Length: 480
Image (tube, rainbow, N blue to C red; front, side, top):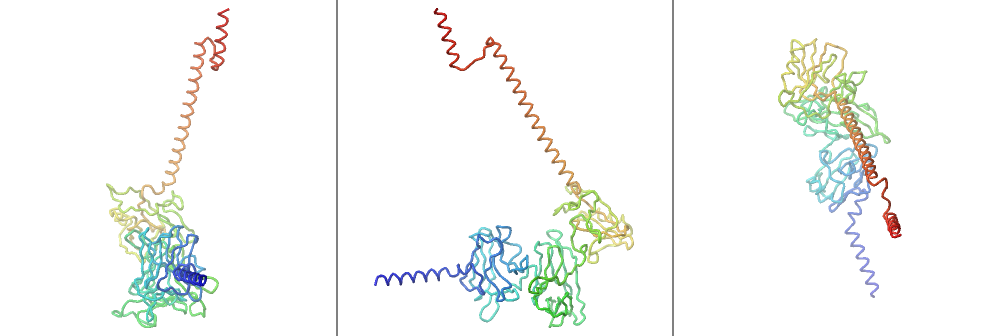
């Protein structure tokens, strides 16, 4: 009887522990849905991605993405993409530690007290699921309470609506995509508070017109192989064709704003992601292909605006200079070069001046101006009111560029070389000084030693016991 009771108690305890820790154990293996009570923590033994949830097709996974060894982001990934399709908040990351916890209580919540990260879907659903199109959803019995498609990061997926309230941001945070009244625009971050327009695709409005008062436009990747702009209904006001346009394909299409500022489309054919679209075809038309204070010439590649500098070190990266005036302003030198144009000039404001000198003077007198470009043929003067980035090299020498270059630009390598040389000279001088002091000390000790020997009649002091033996023999001889 006692043995039966013991077996029953044992079974009860096993069942209790199984139920108590079911969610934690289950968190280590990806599942098809997550329900209330789910909890998970990052596994210290995983180096890249810890899947928690998968879609029914097995193509997409949601889980912990490990960043730089010690940071964590919630992400949706595809096994053949190096970058995730979606991250919960590109501007914040949690720590990859046992203190970070993800749980589902109707809302999906990640909490990290050490990094003070607290993020939630602020929903009231029953389940968390990942659909075949990579859309992460919090669902209840009758509705979708929250979905990741409403919060894109740097990627749009086929049939995902991109609205005027949304922004795509490249993974490095330097470029963004937004919708205007009748266009798609790409923008480059040039300072902490300002952006520069560098690519624009306006709606052709061939099949449908954009009507005032009918609401903003939205964009969507159509399965027929194009990026469509829509206002109302299903007839697009514009069609931006992909390589697969009106071709029967069986695969998922995505559109991604990449870290070089280009907007590229890819098609998953079942084994690889094939390039399907490229908004900017020429390298020199990208917003900053060669870096600051550089020149991109089609067919020739990159060079520095100042020929005395070295490629890759044309200017200070991330320069915070905002004022080139006197007083406390940054010191600068002036550089002039022919055969220069501003990139994407059709998107920039310009003024008309009667001469190159007048154009330059407008920049000289403006503390916020970093440079000017003058077209001698048209008289157009373009003022560059942000740190100089890659300019466009052209064959026409009458297109003149004037640039304010910070005092340290172009002298970086020489200053580094001078610093290294001075350091080596200091080390050599210190070594010689120590050697001379040591030699002088040895000479002094030798002279002192010889002086003492002369005072003792040429006898050198020996060990204590030998001195004692000589003394005893002297005593015995005196007694005799």
